[in-house]
Image (cartoon, rainbow, N blue to C red; front, side):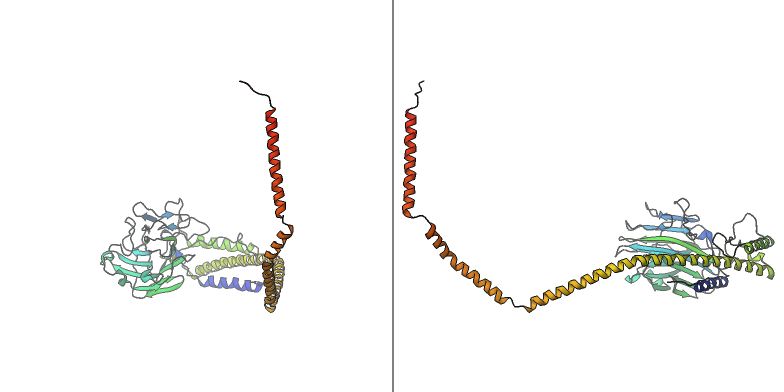
Length: 446
């Protein structure tokens, strides 16, 4: 696909429009999230623990922590459990989202389940539990497993702390929401999202609504956790990201600064950045873009002029980023065109060889058909009969020929008798010579 300059400009300004419309962004809650920083950043600074989270296993097993994921249950052996829990509760209410990126792989008949918990009492210091082994809890759990053998499903369960799921005769009937979801061996990450608004609870899987209800509102100060368990033929569950975010600026984590940021210094800094941006060349690049303006509390932006100036500076920063994006896309398009031309030059020679081979194959097919027609059109039975008669005649003549050769070139009886008499005479003569020589030999006395 080739992008024209007009198309690139349209794409860039569309991105600017969308970015400007999304002023109310989602703010990540750092102490409840991991794996969201990207750019090759490790989820663990020492590959032993995740900041603000507890990782636990059962008995002698401990989940494996890698640079970009946590393996809660291994591919082998089976019957293992693993979990990770946030050390801090969710202090935010209203509009918030918890997004879990995971992957499940295993044998064709492998089994296991994954749980996303939001409960009042953390299980960070207990053994990892699944839906079927957990004691009483107060909160919500989302379960990903192969319920009813349909290839996979996502179900939601609520508990007010009075129901013991571990001893319940039929836990599966307590689900308040469910959707089918084939999550095993997908080759890419699955995304499970729990979204809570002021009047709606929604579960989203891979960008599509799984189920939702307006009859449930989750309280604040509950703990988030993820647990997984594997069957005897195990499924391996990997957790890559857990991102908790909120859309209300006054409920998100405050920026970590040694001193509070005041309104007036912020405006002075914004004006300085604005002046520097105007002095920069029009052709922006990723190295020329200034850093994003620091976050400011909404309570510090009090006047309409301050709000307009803050919005103006942020939109200007977005415009510079879009300009850099346009430059990058243009360079990428030029590079793509160059690679396309080089590839077409290489493919032209290959195409000639393929055409030559196709012609040879076609000629060989024509000759094969001609040989087949010749074989099918001619009758070789007469020739075979002639050869057969010739062989029969030769077989009949062999005895007569042998008899004639023997009779013509064989020895007569008189010749055989003469040969026998001559042999006898030679034997007698040899014996007489031997006796004579022995009689004339000197005597030996003892």
